[in-house]
Image 1 (tube, rainbow, N blue to C red):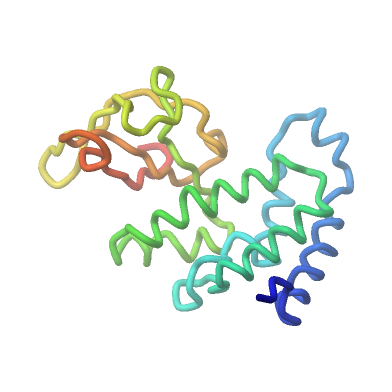
Image 2: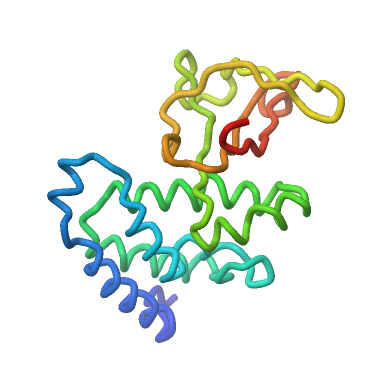
Amino acid sequence: MDFSWSDEQQQLRDGAQKFGASLNEGLGARYKEAAFPKDLWDRCAEFGLQGMPVPAELGGGGQTALEMVAILEGVGLTCRDNGLIFSIGAHLWACETPLLLFGTDAQKQEHLAPMAAGELIGANAMTEPDSGSDAYALRTTAVQDGDHFVLNGTKTFVTNGPVADLFITYGRTGGKGFAGITGFVVEQGT
C-alpha cells in the first residue's frame, strides 16, 4: 500500500507550507501583546483555511479529509504562531464540522458561508469548571421555553471565546450519557 501524497495533495501541502512561512513576521511582538491576530485570521481565510471542510455550495473549499491534512500539515510545518493554528483548528473541527454534520439546513445556510470566509469566528463551549472536557459530566441545562431553549450553566476554556461570533454550546436536555446532551448554535451577545 502506498501512503505517499498524490501529486495534487503534495502541491496543496507545498503551497500551504509556503503560505505558513508568510505568517511569521512580527510573531515576537504578537506574543508580547497577547492579542488575537485578526489580520492573520483574515489572510488565512483568503487562503481558504477556514472554509476547507465546507462544501462549495455553502461557500467553502470542499476539501477532502486527506487534502485538509496535507494543507494543515504544510501550514503547521512553517507557521510558528501555534495560537493562530490552534484557533483555526478549533473553528474548523469543533464548530464548523459539528454544524456541517448535525446542523439544520437553515443553520448551515445562515452560518457556514460566513464562517468559511472567516467573517464569523467559531468556538466550542463544552468544557465546564467541574467536568473538564468530560461531556457525560456536564451540568449546563437546556430547557425548552416555547420555540427556543434557555441554557443555564458555566463554560470554561472556550478556544476563541473572547473573539468568537458563534458558539456551539452543549447542554443537558435530559437522559443519561450522550443521549441527553444537545448542541446549540449560540450567537455572540445572546
